[in-house]
Image (cartoon, rainbow, N blue to C red; front, side, top):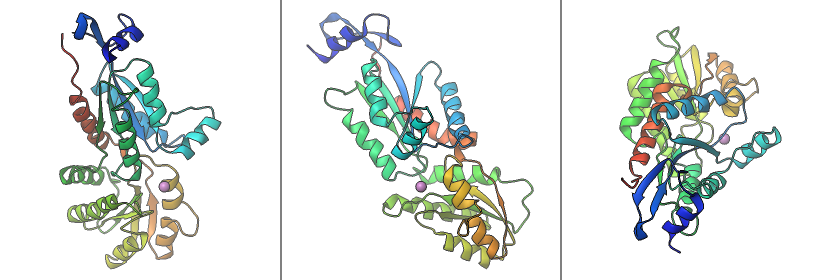
Length: 297
Ligand code: CO
């Protein structure tokens, strides 16, 4: 049995979103297109609004295309499962979609950099591109920081959405995640430069990579900053934003900066809560979708 006739046998008539195209042997081949949004994940109820915003904008842009979710973090999936909210891993989500008869799927990474998490998604997509569970076509959309132009677009958006009450000389301190062992950590070093070129008092640091918190502190001191707005440079304002950035523990960024005489105002909003940034991911999804060639009538 060819793959095409198998698909027809499994689906039956009128099931797919795009029923058409004569396949070999003169039988109707049914295509079904879907979107899979893949994020690191969050178990934080408030932080979830960022993903809800991304989903809303995705549905708005690609009306009629089914949208599914997967989280790459096993820790978060387990935590959510205990709360009764089951979110699949990318592998399970794609397996289910394959089972349900999806033929053309665009997977969109909602990661900020092309780091280890993104590499895993890429591997998963490769697994579903050949063999018994392969789709007719599967495309992967790039993470947020994929080009210099987009980094500039992102920086301009974040600076524009900085608190209106911010006065000259008051800093914006952005906390990215960072990646200690992955070359894509360099994206944050590039981000620091781009933000710095646009705004003398906008500093980028990371939790796990470079630039570090100490780099940010040194910059704040050099600029004689007295007040700083603390902003997550992550899709969601989850655990890192609430604790490592804005928490009261001794070594949170807020505590360290305050110890150094800098007043801190946390602004806990994930980048995906800003429509203009969410649209960068959605533009990448549009590119991925454009690579899916559905059979024509
Ligand atoms: Co982390």
